[in-house]
Length: 545
Ligand code: HEM
Image (cartoon, rainbow, N blue to C red; front, side, top):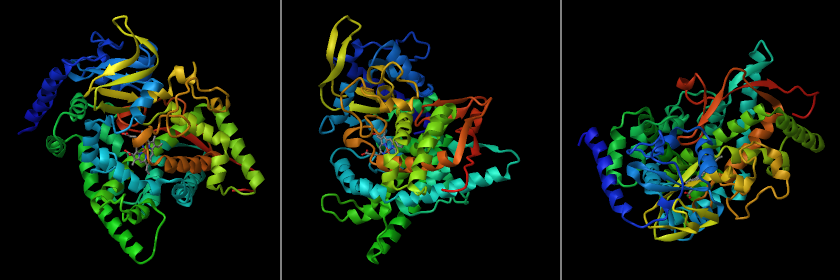
């Protein structure tokens, strides 16, 4: 079968499937939402192009302001889908037991193809077993012990930025913080998760390192082509064999880069597992994530074989690097745009150092820095790296709502009927910026809100950190959130203490949301992801470095 026939199959199979599905009763069709007269709608893609090409926060604002927290939109071939940012509904979706709202087949299949069948792709009992085996390696104690490894990388970054400043004829240099933090985060994950040196900051010529830099940005593209949007969505109806067939032949830069990465990453994962196993047999136990995974794999309940462990290596690389790098660069961008918050954070860090007598922050020190943690939370809230998670309903069910919704028919709903097979876009970004939850200034970056009593207007408990949905919630929430948090604390405490950040006049930055949030400079979109900021050194008296 040639490629064009495959695309035809990718259109016909879902179309028939959807016609059958439309015959089922559902309340989704009665919810308000954008209609088919909207210029962004097409029969083939529905509103998916509008969503994939929107700027960060764009869809969430459009939906919340015009239709509320529960919205019906069109998926390909006129399928009605639900977009949800309502706290009570999200609580049900993420906390219902027995995988009632299963991760969609499209997300699982694509994850299995791009990162092998690790935790992101697993489902049901396999997911539960793998997650149980992995939890100890991501617990509080294990994550705190990684701090010296994070510090090792930020030490290097600090020296490199100071060298750039020393070489500069002026006191300030323009630095693409997204590029630098992307390389630093790759070195962090190599070091802390696998004891592997990518040499990304030093620019070592390593094909694996090259293939990982901005991998997800290249894979999704900042404005994905209609063909890719359709195939990615249709992947829930197509068998894995056919999807793999399409992926292996696709010549788009994203698929080419993914295949290249897979080739090198599989080789290195195997070598790393062999070396670690040998080390453990020789009584040398490392504290990196991989050593803990291998050691824990002997546990009867949580057992994972080497193929699964190798898949977890690739899954962790995919899930833990660009997410954290983007989050840290967005934090520096917010501080550059809001110098008053930057000054306040630096004052907190300086005061702490002067009382302590040195700047060697321990994990407990970092945890106690309340303004640092407020700025981190506010960044995670306003810039939700994974804006939506797609879930499929595995049994007919009622979805409860926080407040009544009046449908298009005039009927009032306190809960809505969603039949088996319905697809729901659970909006993490929508929840994080929902005025019903965070108040009327929900879209404004304002770290001080974290010190205000009654700051949250909704009392449904959600999320695993700060009541935010950024790391998702429930059985499939981010396993690496403590790793990401301690890494961000260590990096931000150091960088904000040592450097001043300001915006570059004349360079307008926009953030798009095809996969993760991707910053681009207006007029320089062809250069891909970048976030340039002006950086200068902080000059303080003599001591405490
Ligand atoms: C700011 C940084 C991060 C953000 C915003 C983030 C966000 C998320 C989200 C939203 C999910 C759920 C995805 C889904 O259900 O499809 C997830 C899952 C996951 N994350 Fe993270 N993540 C971050 C950092 C990390 C790090 C540093 C690691 C590892 C070192 C990691 C490893 C994982 C893994 C393995 C999963 C799959 C969990 C499962 O399905 O049980 N993440 N992450």
